[in-house]
Length: 274
Figure 1 (cartoon, rainbow, N blue to C red):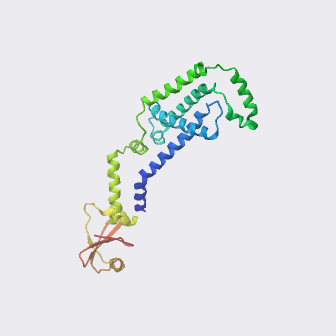
Figure 2 (cartoon, rainbow, N blue to C red):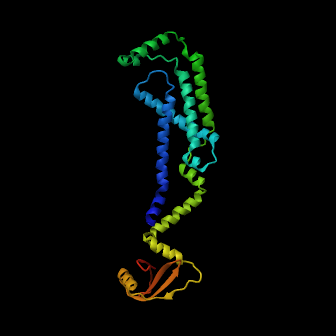
Figure 3 (cartoon, rainbow, N blue to C red):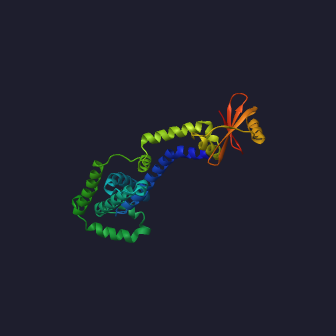
């Protein structure tokens, strides 16, 4: 059980990396969907999906940059990246508004006519509206306003962009664990997994921990035929002498083997030899 927990802990950085990738993908799709709602003209599905991904990526990058303005002194909010989600939401709404202003003068054109059976009514309304639009649409105040908001907001966000955050570092720093401490924990876990103690049962580990380093504890000569037979069966060697140490209601049996090794056991199970 302990070995399994240690293995899971060792896999934690890889799991967090996968979680971070999933977070970015979902953020791009969701916030891109919000932003693309501002596109007022008609687009085929694939082109609309491409625009959604582009706007979603912009929302994610700008939202991460703006997250510095939405910091919360709450460990749960930091772990869940609430500040970054709020920043992305604000960015996608701004992009929605700017896209709506930029595209209100774009005619639907031939592409929509291919879908005339489903969109006949919408096409007629759009064509009537297109006839009233100015020839030079780039000089239309709404188009200019949308471009200024779109470019200005992205430029402001990119100026303040400091790179993509690391989810592992964010979570560990929220828990008060530095990079050097995490490296030491991983190293200790690796050493433990490579040691014989990784396969010990919880009963053996607790008995060893209970008596280890306790002052005043002494090895007392001990005789028990059942435990002696258990140790000899596990090691294939005869036991010369047995001792025991007791503390906290736990008993650790030390068996001195004929080969000079010392083996450890509890009253119910064999543990390890050294």
